[in-house]
Length: 166
Image (cartoon, rainbow, N blue to C red; front, side):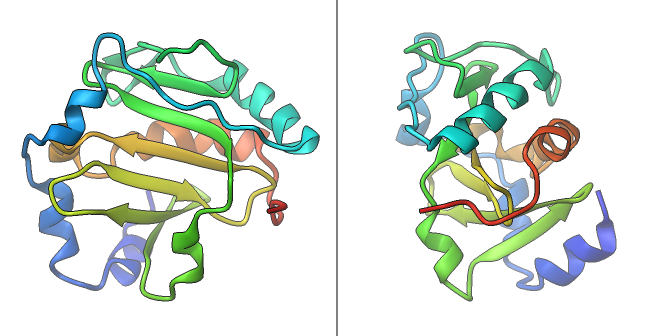
């Protein structure tokens, strides 16, 4: 992770404590054993890239074992309980239209950061031909953005830079 970029992009001093705070919320109850994730419906080019990403995803993220959500899909994956959930081929996040959205660059992959009080952290890739979304439950926020280091290499290798449709 490029720390100088992280410091520059996460200028609001309030954000770092939020990312490292450990808390439990009702939003976490959606994850865990029997975790569910809605399956995206990307266009053909994005779906092809997402299938390639699936083959490169690690067995462990942030030290957590693979725990894919239901329904089973090539476009979703999960780790841990409550699960960190990855969805590939999601629609363009509305947060990308907000100039106040915080972002971070992790090993060559840019991510937009969204967080609602007490809820999960929602991280979305930017400037790629498919949008990849990672949800980190609030109860796992104690490790901050460290899961993104596990996703950077596979995303960079399989989801080319570009602008996704829609």
